[in-house]
Length: 568
Image (cartoon, rainbow, N blue to C red; front, top):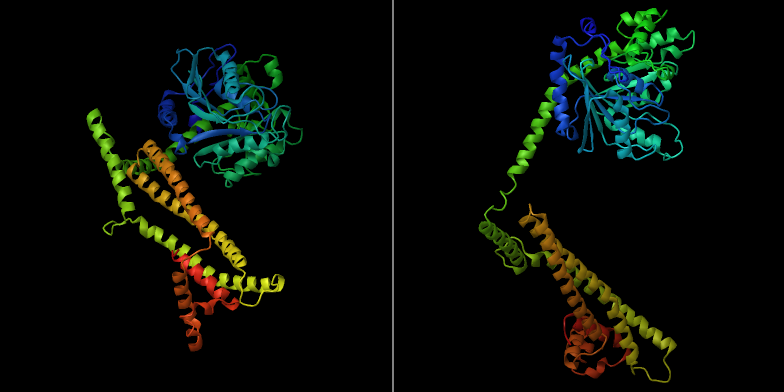
C-alpha cells in the first residue's frame, strides 16, 4: 500500500474557484482500478443491484459527525450542509478521474428520468438540494429514492460511494416521531448486504463505543470484516485524551479488520473564512505533520484524506475482485431459472391477424370443451364434477338422517307438555292436530339454514373447479382469465339465485303438513314392524289402531321419513 500511497497527492478539487489541485493518480494505477469500478457501475446502471448485491461503500454516521466534510474532501465539491438532517436521500457519489486538460463536468440523475449535465462545481449543492426536495418534499422528511451524482475531473480518485442520512435520535419540528427509526431502516437496507463496505464516520471528541453508527455496523458485521471507521475533528479533542485516540486508530479499542483512519476536514470557521478545499487539504497535512501525538499516524498511513482515498479505492477494488465470481455465478443461476420459466411459456398468438383470430377461437374452444367435460359426468373423463359434489350431497343426507332421533324426542316432549299444560276435557286418544302440525313446521324450518349452506358450498366448489380450468387454459393471458371468471361468476350468481328460490319454495310447501294416507300408513307400518311385537303386528290392517296419543312420535317420524325420501 506504501507504493500506492505515493501515487496519491492532493487530488481534491476546489469547488469554489475551480482550480485543479496538485497531484493525480499515476496512469498505471488508474488503468488497474478503473475497469473494476466501471463494471460494477454499469451493472448498477442496468438495474442488476435490484436482484443481486453489488460491491459498494456506504457512508454512515450520526448527525454532525463530519460526514459531509469527508465527502467534500474526497469529491472536491461543496455538498449541502447545515444542522439536523442534511442528507435526506441516499446520494450515490461517483468520482471519475479523467485526463488532464479536460474540463470538469458532472451529471446528476434521479427518478430514472431526470438527468442534468453541468460544468460548474459551485452548482452541485443547489442541484442536490433540488433533487432532495423533489423526492422527499420540502422540509425535513427523508426518502429512499437514490440520487446519482457523477463527477468527472482530472483531480479526483476513482471511487464510488453512497452517502446515507445522518442518524437522528430526537425529532425536530416538522419531523415525524419515528424519523429515527425511518433513517435506521433506510441505512439497514444498504449496510446489511455482505458486499457492502461500511464506512462509519465518528468524531474524535465523543465516546466511540456509544456512537449509534458504529453500533449499527457491528450488528450487521459483528466481526468488523467489512467496516472501516473514520475519525473526524481531531482538533476538538480534550487535552490529555490524545493517547486514547491513538489506541483507537491503532485498532486496540474496538478492533476492525479494515481498521481506522483519522482525518481533519474544513470546520465551520474555515468555511465562513472561505478557506478553499485545496488550502484545507494542505492545512490538514500540516496539522498531522506538526502534531505532537498524531504525526506518527501520517507515516503509518492512518491519517489524512489522501490516505483515506487510497484505502477506500483499494478496498473497493478488492471487494469487487472477491465478489465477481459470486456475482457471475448468481447471474448464471438467475439466467438459467428465467430461461427455464421462458421455455415453459407458450409461443404466444401469431402476428398474422387471420391466424391470430383462429388461435383465439381454438383457445376458447379448448376452454369450453374442458368445462363441458367437467360437467358431463362421463366415466371417460378424469375430471368429473359429479364425483366432487357427491361428497357434499352425502353430507346433506347424513345431516337429515341425524335429525330423525331428535324429532322423535321432540314430539314426545311436545305431547307430554300438551298433556300437562293444555289438555282439558277431551278423552285420551283424541289428537290435538294443530300442536303436531306446529312441531313439524318448526322442525322443517330448522333445516332451511343447513340447506342454504350446502348450496353455498356447492357453488364455491364449482367456482373453484371452473377457475382452475381458466388458469389452465389461459396461463399467459390474465385478461382472458379475468373475463372468463367474470362470466362464470355472473352465471353462477344467477343460477344460485334461482336454486335458492326453488329451495325456499320447497320449504314453503313443506310447511303444509300433508301426505296421502296410503303412502303415510305404508311407511308407518314399516317403521312399526321394526320394533313391534306379534300382538302389535295384528293392527297392521286396522289403521285406527294408530290413532292414539302414544303413537304420535311414530306417526310424526313416518311423516318425516316419507317426506325426507321425496314422498307427497
